[in-house]
Length: 534
Image 1: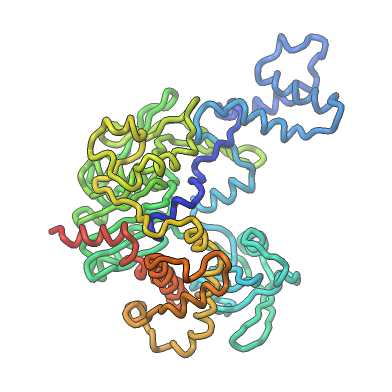
Image 2: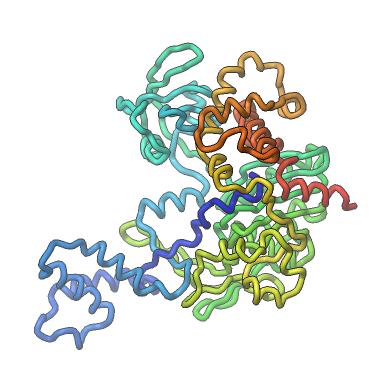
């Protein structure tokens, strides 16, 4: 996506501030159970003087539950207490109820139980964009463009279906069964099938392709358990196809596991080079080094970052920058230098407590300021206001950090955001379903006649053109913006966005990034730079 558009996205989910009471951090699960049993039999006459701080909180909650004038939820009171107890510690210690922690863990673990489809909800219909090859749906014969209209006998068409509803219906325990009714628009027929859910991979690599015969491009979206294996496979595949130089895209990558960052950085560094070290008051210093197994130690390397590249992304950037292994290009990264330890509680909720800070090989902690009188969430908007995103305010001058903000990795080569199409209404339109639905409709109407004409993405990119008429037809479906009110650069952006979206339906997600590469200012700048290096 064009680099400016993050201005209109919400800040990273990594800025969660939910937290939990401090005794969990000491792993005193058994002690907690003993306390719960003890406070029930406390002599109410002795008051609170002889009981511990832990027991005091529980005693108060139990008294409220037993004596308060109205009915209250002690669970809600406890969670409120948790937040108040730890709200001033740091922005990244957090407590997550089971459903939230489950979704987060699935992403980081890199898999879940499901039926294996990429889907969209188009005009209140659940449409299959593609079935994952080898997955349960693929084996059951589900095709691209099929509609799922019933799940376990329940109608889901034209009922206001949301993405969250689909996930609840289709995800489940591995090997469990789900019954589907499928409508095929190609044959105008319905059929019922039963599918056994399987292990569905959640890839951390969004795109891996050659931008030209020698320059490869990999977009890494998060750092999961599978990231090291995925990036090794992607690099090896690109090298076999002729890649000599690589652009690694970490924009909008909010991080993930520390060991995954180590595994990714290892692919580019020499044996025994320090990747990162961690240390805290209650955590001994731990150092993480590269080994000899890296698969891309010598080729030219550029890493793209922006203000939403955080945590594990910054570990990789810091290591590659300190060892002068890569050129970091883009804008200053988020600035999250805190390490969280996950602790699963008896009710399957999760507590992630900050236990240490991490440091780049040169000893820099990239954590940006937090605490009293610091509006942590507003930092991104402050960067917009002070001009940091459009002007290279740092210019390798460390004193500038005091004026414009501390923390994060400052890129070696600054790339300003593109403000040529930065009107709020235009950018908001880009994230509505209107453009996506228009492109899918075009694909459905034309894919049969185009089959064989555009037999590969290179052919499509060279010979498929989006004209003003297509843009006009797109805008007929919205009242938000009108063709006559758009400037030339906005019309041109709509054209390449339409082309990229349509390409993703004809081929795959990789296709979109190939189309965008010539228009995305960050990627095109990186291509120009890396093409001129020896």
